[in-house]
Image (cartoon, rainbow, N blue to C red):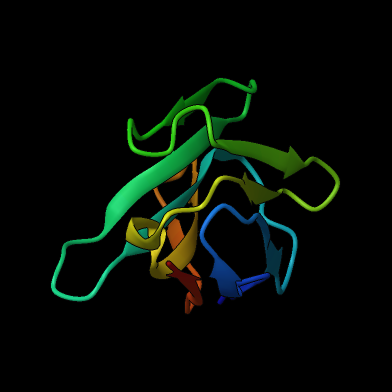
Length: 116
């Protein structure tokens, strides 16, 4: 079973930046889309950003212009660079990978806390 492990979260002041990384326990083939989701306390998990196998990206309106998703083609895992962080960005951030065969892999999440 493939495991994803996120890193790069932490406590940051408002206006600061973070770079989230995702590592896979083994190579994942036939990836169609990779993404980052987040879940704040009392709220549903929501998509933050995604990137397809051909490089098309999609961002939530709330992070558009402040975040950049990229991928490590060699490792087939995504990165998320976030800047101008706001307290409302506080959440657990999850890495997600979906394959052509319909397999969806999730990490355990990394906490991002933005202080005002």
